Image 1 (cartoon, rainbow, N blue to C red):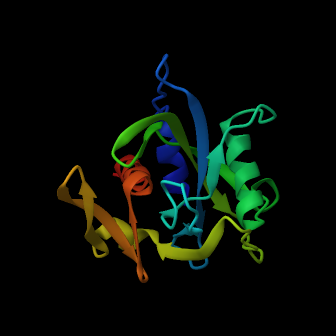
Image 2: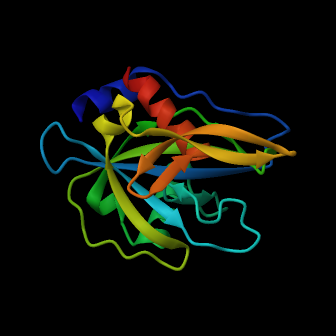
Length: 190
């Protein structure tokens, strides 16, 4: 985990600014190490909700920045506590942030920019998902990074079927925005 923290501190994350940014959000990429040298990363499966373009997707806990949030790390902390009952300030440590990622929904830019924050848990309390979360999964970070869980999904867009990259986590596939964030993490660790 020391290597991950050092790599995150080595390069300042790139931020997206400008008039096209209509909102900001933050997510928490949460790591734990139950056994030395075997870090795991947490994913949630978002609850199915009509009208939500990310309904049912595998994701990191997180959401929109609210006026009361001091910064985007505070957004990630608040959203994580709301979604899975995990108090990151009590059980974890902020290791750093990755480059901002523009959010797409159904193939279109939304104007939302997401900042992935990376956290290390000191201990893992019992997690309590709320109505926004259907499942919680832990996956081996080294196995994900190795390519052993690489897959693709078929995505219909404008009358075409596109093959999009993903990672298999149990019976689920991590793809889209969360796949991009994991790729940024792996690039930083390279």
